[in-house]
Amino acid sequence: MMFKTIILAVFVVISVNSYSQTINWARLQKTDKHILNLNAGLDYSLTAGLGYGYQLKTKIPIIINVEYSMPFGENLIDDNKTKLGIILQFAKAGNFLFTGKVQGIFRRNENDFVRMVNIGSDMSVTAGYYKKKWFVAGEAGFDKAIVTHFKHTKFYKEVFPNVQDGWYEPSTGGNFYYGLQSGISFKRSDISLRIGKVLTQDFTTTPGLPFYIQLGYTVKLRAKK
Amino acid sequence: MRIKLLNLSFIITTIVMLTACTKERNIDEAGNLVPKTVEQDVSLPSIAVNGTQLHAEAFGHPDSALLIILHGGPGSDYRYLLNCKAFASQGYRVVFYDQRGSGLSRRHPKDSYSLQLMYDDLSAVITHYRTSPNQKVFLLGHSWGAMLATAYINQYPTRINGVVLAEPGGFVWQDVLDYIKHSRSIKLTSELLNDMLYMDQFFSGRVSEHAILDYKYALLGVADGNKDNSTGDEGRSLGWRPGAIVNNALFDIGDRDKPDWTKNLFQYTTKVLFVYSEKNKAYGLAHAKKVSAAYANVQLLKINGAGHNMISFPTGWNNFYPTALTYLNSLK
Image (cartoon, rainbow over all chains, first blue to last red; front, side):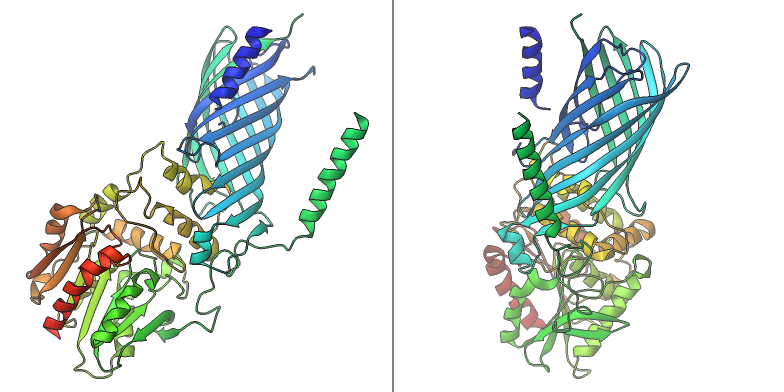
């Protein structure tokens, strides 16, 4: 127990980001209750993340998960993202598995002009070929910025004195993403790589960083019998 | 435990209800996150020329020699160059205008832009303010504005009586790309990178949603004066509202056509004042010499103690203004 606590504490202290936990579903056992994930990569900036998943006692695998991520930089507390939701395996045909993910997002971004707080959602599907020792899958998702609060700094108010602070709705934007994920598995661990492209919801503009790359490490901890 | 949960749900419900009662603001509505343009706010000074409406102002006697100020970007505005008003008290008619699609000027669709249109706008501005055919015309361009000034002189070598060029990226496309590469190199682990990229998940806009895209472009201004930025500015210069679409459109045109604005410059024998800043690490003497070599007769000037936006801040301005005035007076 002490050992598990230390591992968890280390993960929290390293305080790492994530786009999602990447799991080898072929290797996931019913007894794998706790799923921890560490990852780093490019996700709208250079980021690092930490994820925790809890597998429910259900017929089909369902994981409740929470993810926290933040970008690198001198100020480590001004930008971050927290996701909470479920991941479930909804179909299986031999080694082909299909999973879906629905998450709520709370994120924050601050610079010398504005502080933005956003409530959003992230929905994605993954379809892939999963073996015990490796897997490869395609993924596609939509990250929606539902409502955003803007609070501008003194400097921006000098630029535009009549700027309107407050909540902005309806939706302030959204981005589609699609790509590939792959990984190798050993013992209770998976090492995974995700790579893909990001497009704005109207497909006519692209974000400043129009792609994502994420290297992840996932470990599954079994419940005591 | 049950009471605590009930209390929590009451607090959450109250917060949600209070939030729901606040006034709904639309991110694409001008006047919310960015100011309105001249077509949305009639109180702004403007001129209607060449099928558009430009935010513009002029200072000094109308019959004095014209000094047209060309801002950078493309897509910035003339607010950061307002120090140049000082030339008005020295016998010049100083004309500021936000270029098409920039600042507080009217916005246009992305596919409507061309370099010729930008030249035609400049011709129209000159025509609008010129009171007689003998009135001399000078250009003062900063960054992209200096490129536009040169492109205009290359197109019409006899129309301009003198030009001050402040750190143009280049007059051939490869020089422009080289400068952009050096001036925009940012450390991957820096806070500045987050400040410029992380916002993309908070809001996004279509190419027709100018207010959103202009706001996003404005936020990229965090790079100005930042210690991780190589352009060496001593602070952030003020602008009104950048034009994201014109910036994007003209960059795409440059990338597609790879323009060379030097082919006719040999016909322009008037002395050119070419200035570059001491602190802009992406520029320097070598690049200044390379770019300015396209002109036959050049006075090269280093502005000590200043970065790229040398005209905006006291140190740069105090080192720039006397030489620029002497140069212009020598041609008046």
